[in-house]
Image: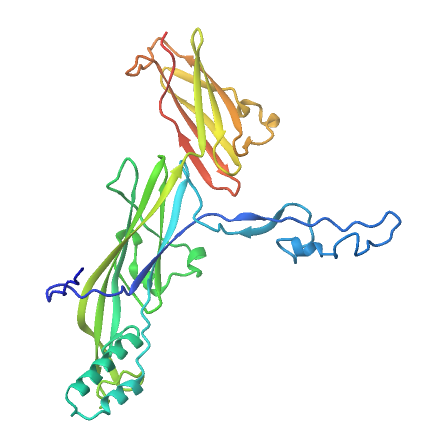
Length: 402
């Protein structure tokens, strides 16, 4: 039979945290899909259809994602929608999220009637009176959130730190925090709490008013495939302020009752840590093959879209290793007037690119540990359907032994 362990007098008193943490991923919206109903058909003679031959008429606007807009039979509407879930994270993209630390304390003063009712009991009564005082103190603590035995809680020194644990760095990489822009804060100006915080990179502690929050933005470039863990730590100081009576009111807790609040009181540093795990997947598959020429090489690469959405290739470059000089044989090598638009890869589409490498001078090419010449690296840039940027740089590409 399990036994509950009695709390030691030296252990700190545990309780619910006064500060909560919300982590929201920042991603661009997408265009909403709609499935417009076809117009109702009429009889060749011009007579309206009978109720027996066709179901009742349903307005076409009822099937549109944006009914107040002009009717459009196109499947993609001009309405923007937010992603319904966390979504997928891809290698080469930037993972961004906002960290929100919220003060959940309700600093409304307790109801004075409950204190009057508890003090109206006679002092006699032995254990019954002691039980009454215990229940009254418990009701004051629980029923008036933010107050402990008639004293107000103050949250100061709020600090947020974050790190990213990757497959190659399980110990975690520290992340730089930045202030949330006005579009996320909902205001064009910083709040008083954020103004007092100063530079978020210095991670200075700030005071949070009841119901207030502080927001920070983190961004991390995903460069490897596998599990990633975002670890966020919140530290703050919880102070129970002492109410001092100043106008004969006996320490009134009601606003305007003559009571003054002193910041001195019992303070303790509290901290908590939360972990958020996600998987980074490959968005672009790259397969290469090198062919030898008399005085150089030809490098071919197949690019496959492994994601679930379309992507536009912005640039595909080959960074050659000396003494090679690379020449692109792709769409960007055409004259400007002959270029139409950047290639678009739909899910599972494959595109082949090619480069010619010419050797300059008599310098010997660098050779890897396997004895094969190192040609260079591919640098690929793309954009998603809604404009998110992505970049991938391959490892060193080698040719065959001659």
